[in-house]
Image 1 (cartoon, rainbow, N blue to C red):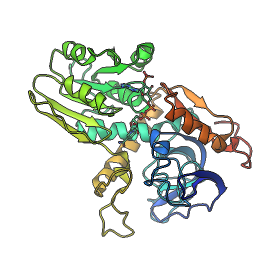
Image 2: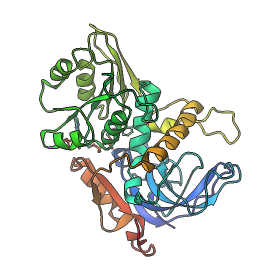
Image 3: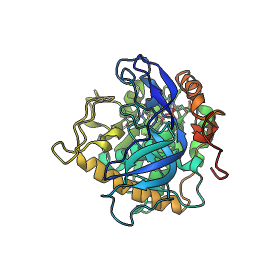
Image 4: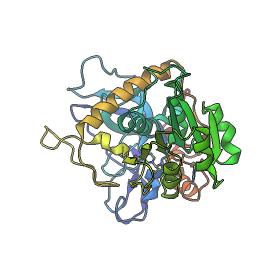
Length: 366
Ligand SMILES: NC(=O)c1ccc[n+]([C@@H]2O[C@H](COP(=O)([O-])OP(=O)(O)OC[C@H]3O[C@@H](n4cnc5c(N)ncnc54)[C@H](OP(=O)(O)O)[C@@H]3O)[C@@H](O)[C@H]2O)c1
């Protein structure tokens, strides 16, 4: 198969690679569409990710099940089923920037007939990270058990224009929450259209103060979808008089002294951790941070996949705009450069695998 492979010197290349061999708990997926996340390219040229040869990049995917492992429960998956999700790309010879990938049989979202592969390929990292933050870390209600819309229960999603934030805003709104968010001025209406009740310009230094006013100084839960340090300070400063919890996507400790604000680091990859000692156990997460194996996170993620399959079937999730590159995997270098240059705004970089030179015909329905 064609795949985007690490060369071991910090560089990458489109190469022929072996189709992954599935373990008994896994399924083999023929990838139709892959999308790009900052994690795919952020660590390029560092010793961390791309210093080993033969690993395949890419986390997010949508495709078709072609093989089912012996231990996948009967009836859970069917050959030909359309599925989407995320895997831990870049660290083994198994990534989504490839014609085939292996993934845990229960750790995928089932794609309804009327949802495109292109939309479904956006969901993996963005939605699973959001679910971990909203439910595992902040213990907020889910779309399957919403609170009444007038409950007043509120969450701040810092950066509703990031892919993660765009889906977090939607999930929070579907759960009946009052959603406060941030965006650059030109994208405020975009985030409101996703369901946010109030959106503040993050370039305005008064944003945290305006959020405190808008929430009556009572905000107790927030998710920072950028977590570059400054945004986490801003998110923490938006919390109300009683303090509360902020889920962050990079490690951060609140320095706020006037109210107790707990910061909880969410690492989406933690769903791939299994307690060591288990049969064919997966080791602790090593990249991009050392993270102890937590099989509970895998179990949670499986329930999130079931929930996402349900709400997707209800047509309740709106896609974010697509930035499609013309030559599939042969365009990934350009996609990396565009992302690193800050050219991605409220959109998802998307590759159709069949557009890659040397791969078969583009399916009629993507
Ligand atoms: N820990 C984890 O497991 C995990 C999982 C997923 C992502 N992440 C990390 O989370 C970050 C976001 O990833 P993503 O894929 O969701 O992002 P993305 O779609 O690439 O984010 C791009 C958006 O970020 C917005 N933005 C930039 N600076 C901002 C700021 N200071 N305040 C508010 N919004 C800002 C921009 O908004 P405007 O267009 O409005 O300017 C832009 O639309 C990345 O650093 C990624 O590595 C971590």
